[in-house]
Image (cartoon, rainbow, N blue to C red; front, side, top):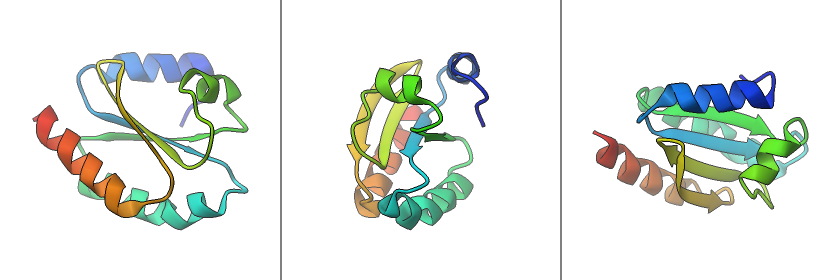
Length: 106
């Protein structure tokens, strides 16, 4: 996915006006493991959305920049601006947000 913070910044810039969802996780996080398969299903279903999974322990600087305080955290972005941040493994809320921003990005 990302090899450095620079790669992250470049990928966001390249995304342009595409909807981007950053999924902040940790390998030791139980709720992250629980919702992970749901996120993968969403990524397959909404192929126009760019999904990026970011390990908070590996990319602390990105996590700090996005003000991540607990995992999982989902940051919805477009044109390099944050639209919404969801905290927690609530798949219903995640799907609602995906549907909302996906319909707005068409």
